[in-house]
Amino acid sequence: MADTYMVGEFRRLYYVAETIYGTTLTSALVYAGLPVAVRPKFNAKVTPEYVPASRGFGYSNREAIEAGFTYVGKAQVVSGGYDWRNFFAVYAYGATSGIQDGTTTYGRLGSFSAIVGVTQGTANRYQLYNGCKIDSLKISPEGGVGSDLLFEAEIISEMIDYSTTKTFSNFQSVTVAADPTIITTATLKWNGTMQINIAAGGLVTVSPTTWSLTVRNNLAREPGLVTGNDAAVYPLAAIALSENKRDILFEMTLPRKSETYQNAKVAGSAVTALTIVVGANTITLSGGVFVADDLPELKQDLNDETVKVIFNALAIG
Image (cartoon, rainbow, N blue to C red):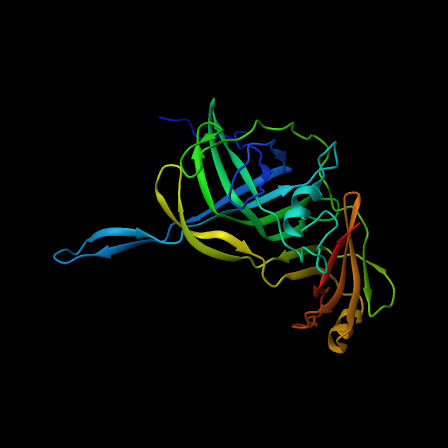
């Protein structure tokens, strides 16, 4: 009997940029960051088909296979060629400087292949995802002030392949490059000052108890048939992925100390800017409006209030 997977046997996630969507290159792998969890998503949409003279199904079909995974990880302090923006910002926003609307790329996102897995004793179990794009990215603190920042990416891929070595031969025929050097710098933490500017009144410090920033690219899958290296014909949900209307949502919870946010919601005030410190960088959100779908509860107790804002621009400096 095989050994149970043990703590410490979960491998890091590495990736390589693609120049043609869905084609995994053999060039050097890149370190994505400190992994917390990888949650595969696979749905072959198996449908049983029933035939006469039997109550059991006679055969089954697989329709438009959906593949991908949720990646939860932590970013680290810049070291050599490693920078959290090279993975999370480039593939979720379009560039290390943030969202690229108004340029010739119009916010188009690059695709990549990702490899992850476990080591069971001395045996390796690899998963290779090709044709990956980040559908959404959420940044939030793991706990309170001073805690690590968590990066949770919902990733859609074209397909997934398995191997006990870095040579894959089912869907693709490819040998993936060696693992890169592991980065050991400190994790990025919630330790910077957050500021908000309401109705062009100037930036003021805000101190939430928790917050999150989510960018949704709302990727649209294009289905099709692909013949794999193993000569099998794969019905796939995503032989291409197109960027759709984008959502940028910031949400925070904070102690209620004044009528500032309540009044701003009722008045429909603009949120000129909001700044979030991430490591040595600052994310600046602009062009915001309050999601005015609630007001804080009034009670004989300490009060919290939730503030939600949608923005139309995101820059990283």
